[in-house]
Amino acid sequence: MTRRELRKHVFTLLFCCEFYEKNEINQQKELYLDNPEVHLSEEQAEHISARVDLVLEKKEEIDELVNNVSENWKTDRMGKVELSLIRLGCYEMKYDDDIPTAVAINEAVELAKIYGSQEAGAFVNGVLAKLL
Figure 1 (cartoon, helix red, strand yellow):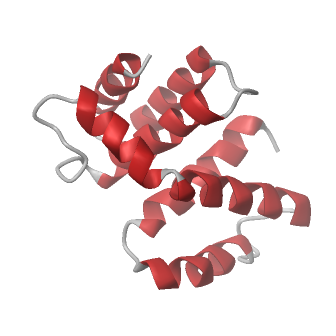
Figure 2: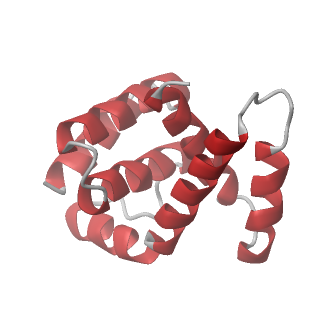
């Protein structure tokens, strides 16, 4: 499985987390990762789960960073697709030394073009670029 495919699964879970209470997230994560239609090895599932946990641990810090740079679009007003991708991109930019900043931004933008609205790619790019 490619890094992009792994990142897509992380995004999907982060997006799903937006619809559940904090105490339900682990159960929802297990349901997703154990789904035979998702086709994940144990190692891939562990990687995805760990990455989701890391992003969620930094969620408040990330949201504060995003709210400081975004104009008229605070995190509580953003679409859930865009917000999930911005959080993932911001995490990769700020806290993951293995991923170059340009790659983090590009991957978030590409996923936004696939899963978000027509303007999602440009929006995600604009917010993440301000975090540089």
